[in-house]
Length: 196
Image 1: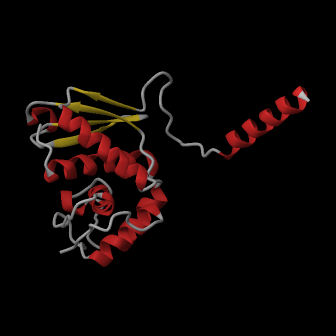
Image 2: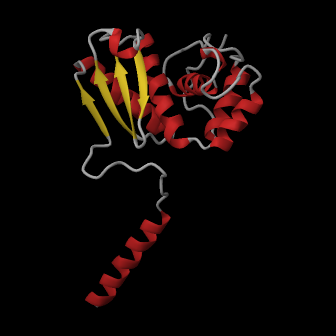
Image 3: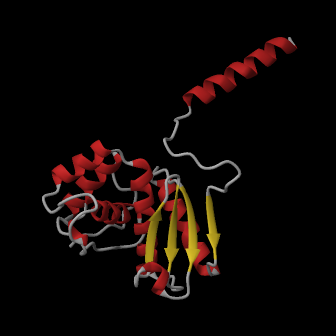
């Protein structure tokens, strides 16, 4: 009977392992999925809440190192920036504020991490084919880049507060929903979305 239970447990383990999706992005062994360095208590709460929003939307993030800075020098004069690395992303927060604008910046930068480590080129091509104001993925003016459209669309789709997207064109509710569906295969998770 003990042998039967052992074989059953082994079979369940193998089936569970085979059924687990394999990500092309692995986290280095013994490294926490997400780390936080030099963040205020408010920033840590904002990061944890934003991680929950991605989780609720079913958007799997790579390992992210969240790093706080006291001025915007480390963010090239901005309030936040995402630095892509092969297996992880560093998200720098260069303002200690935790208002809606900073939350939006944080989610936008996290969406860059999601894009870089999750989207395949054919998914990027599909979004570019459906939006006439995109010139390239990371080429052209900021508002013409597919990567920025993606970050804005994801932010709009998962944030849990009313948010108008005015930084990119093609920002009607219909266009933003269509973009979100193209990128994720699902509808926005929040009912607080608004449009211009």
